[in-house]
Amino acid sequence: MDIKDENFWEMLPIILPAIAHACYVAIDLEMTGIKSQNPMGAQRTTMDQTYADAKDVVESFQIVQFGLTYCYITQCFNFHVTPMFVGKHGAGSALARTVDRRVCLSYSTLLFLQQHGFRLEDAFAHGVPYLSRQEEREAKQQLLERDRHNDLIDVDQEDEHVRQFYSTARDQIQAWLAEPEYDFLNIENPHGGIMNRLQIRLLHQLIEEEFKELRAISKGHFMQIVKKGADPEEETFWRTRHSQRIQAIRQQTGLRLVIEALTGGDFAEALNEEMMQSPAAKEKETSRKESAAQVCKWFVECEAQLKEHRPILVGHNMLLDLCFLYRTFIGPMPETVDGFQREIHRLFPRMVDTKYVATYDSHSMISVFDLQGWYATLSHRPEPKMKVVHPDFGYNKKALHTAGYDSWITAVVFARLCWFRVSGEDLVALMNGTQSDPRSQKKPASPVISPRPIVFPLKKEYLESPRRNKSTSPSKRGTPATPASQQVSECGSAMTLLDESDDSSAAVGHIKPLAPEVLTPSKSVEAPTQNQPNSSPTPLCQFMALDWGSDFFREHGNKICAGAAGTLRFPAAAEAEPDEVKP
Image 1: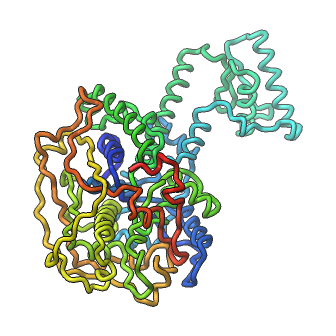
Image 2: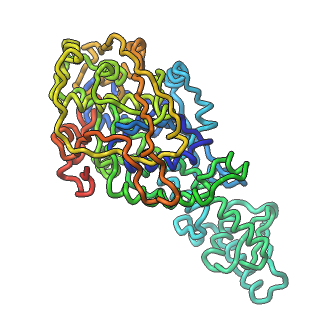
Image 3: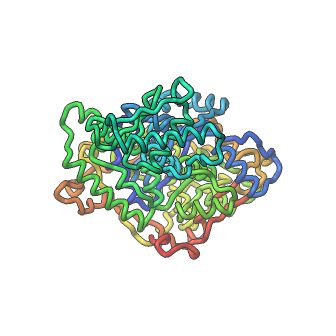
């Protein structure tokens, strides 16, 4: 399902609770560029060099799409992302001036995205906005907080003209307070002309530091000093502007709310009833404020649940994805790779890189597949089945290099790689194309692992009369290979953090996408009602989910491929905090 600015807020009541109830969440990103300005070349690099390369990339380019898929009962979302700013009544413009952004494009990446039907102008015009944690702190400090001690001008260190202006303004204010002729005081530029920026800053600082009961208002050629509360209309203006700026910051936070859910952060307080109502509902005056208020209460419950248990994050060749997520939604990148490991593990204590899982026991002579290659190789496997609760949440047509579709592919690859690893099938034989047709073999025994039902609430309209998709017969399997000359390590090419084959889908163009099996809702499957805010919906199905403490995750968890540098390891499950390893 495509998520844009027009439907983001009304879809949050589906997206956030689903994260809270998910065992695994697969992600994928599309960016405006993926290559560093200082490429390392083909030589074998160190981990520090690889991280510096990734840091340079994410500090230069932006995310334009974010794909999210919940497994195994699948919901897939494709978020269009924009660096633009929202907000009405000038609040958005004030926010844009405060949080200035540099937007950079790689021309080769832009051409590549255009070849796959991506229109950058549409993403920028209709995408979901965002603010990182650091940007939000800066915006609140600059737009909402009056006391800015960090920005104070040391008047004593300035020249004589500055000191004299400051002292004269203080004397004028004190004299006016002692014997006010009018209910305001106008302070002009003693040198003629309009007040310059330095003079305006000095007067605001003087009022904030020494006359907190007063307010300074810029009038162009002069600054007007008034007592707070003296003019009701003026006070109404300031209160309105303050509330508009608060709302603009909340709306601009946008997609970061989803990231906060994934990281067990705070998001419920940033949401209110007005934001949950669609523009169409507001125009027709049919919005249900009571229902929106109830949804906000559910968000509080979801937030509490995610602080106790976060889903396992799944990606493919995910070093750059993690770097982009951190730089876009958290703040500046840590200076060292050690700092990056600590920060990422704090945010995502449980991760799986499907590329690491796939190449774990291979060697340099084995064909190395990109994500689409693994999907093509595993698409004919019968187990495990991936189910979509409604056609709107899946993909029934090929959409390579769309973040949502690629996150769906990642989820499929993860599920079937898990099946291979845990059931003991020969993955290397499959990679070499020497494994016999699994449909002619005796079905392997299901792994003995802990069950965990997957449940999540859905809007009523997504449980009514879904279409049933016909299964698609898999076409003849293709296994695109990377030349041996490019296989410099078990975790990929040294030329870029992404496989060179990740930039091309021609080798799997003949592979038909999986047609996800759509669940037919029964009478027992109902969306939560206002009278049952704390009730859990009936599980749509039950599957065997791997416990984080299982051998599989001890072997493959928290290890990601880092190009020619090898494997980047995060603190092991045994070293994590107790609440980080709950199944």
